[in-house]
Image (cartoon, rainbow, N blue to C red; front, side, top):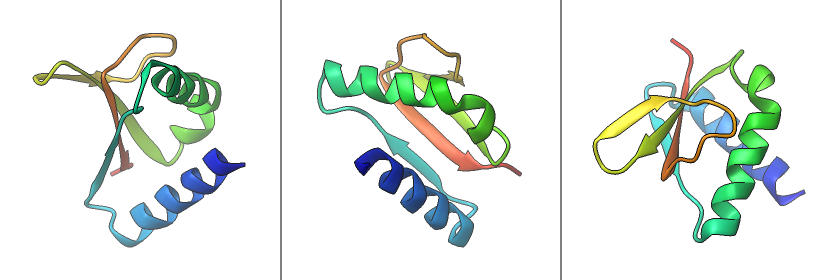
Amino acid sequence: MVMATVIQIVEEFLKIKPEYFVIFKGSDERRQRLYRIIISRELLKIQKKFDIFGGIGEDSIVNFEPNKEYDFYIIRQKR
């Protein structure tokens, strides 16, 4: 329920500010894994409107791939 609300908020925010990025990460391993699972499960739906990236370390940002571990996530409105 909470995650669905957060997803709606992010979607609304990026409609208003399409030039912005939303960057987030879990506060612990469990939450980080939860975010990865949710993004992976909803990827086909999400990719219709957004570009999704995963960050590894401080310098590496790559296209999100399901079931791959990332240190943080980035979502932006498709251009």
